[in-house]
Amino acid sequence: MKEVIIESKLIVYENLEQLPEDIIMLMEKAFKARENAYAPYSKFHVGAAILLDNGEVITGNNQENASYPSGLCAERTAIYYAGSQYPDAKINKIAISAGSTSKINTEPIPPCGACRQAIAEYEIKQKESIEIYFMGEKGNVIKSHSLANLLPLVFDKTVL
Image (cartoon, rainbow, N blue to C red; front, side, top):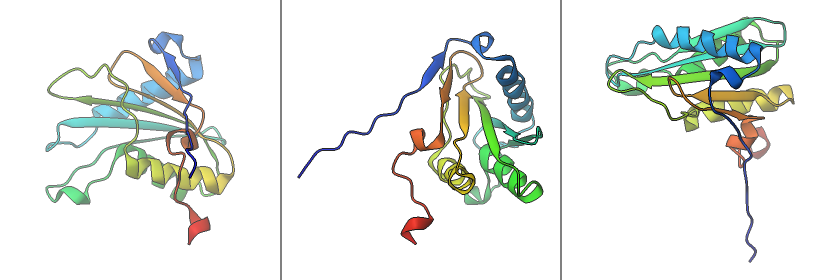
């Protein structure tokens, strides 16, 4: 038997103003997408903005349904749209902002497990890392250099 240690390195920015200009712009698009989320049940709104290598920015927000499993997270809404409309484009960066209508979220909120798996598929497909920036409504912003950093033991096509 041996013990294996898996570590993730993240960069923490104290606020939006510490980010590079292009990431501030991307995060602002995520904020705007968050405002349009349809979340009458959870009251938890999420917005995502994806920067493609062709310069296009795709946004998405969570979309809920009274039949809870039928909803879709912001990250997957955006990434699947990007994949369907720009199948040859690579995803360079994703910005995510999440918040509740019942309180101000100041803690960074990362993608859920299902979204991590969906992002992993595109990172593996394009053979290039995707930078991920995530935050609550305000406060710290966390940057991960890749999805593999957030989901180190990824399930992928090699096991099928």
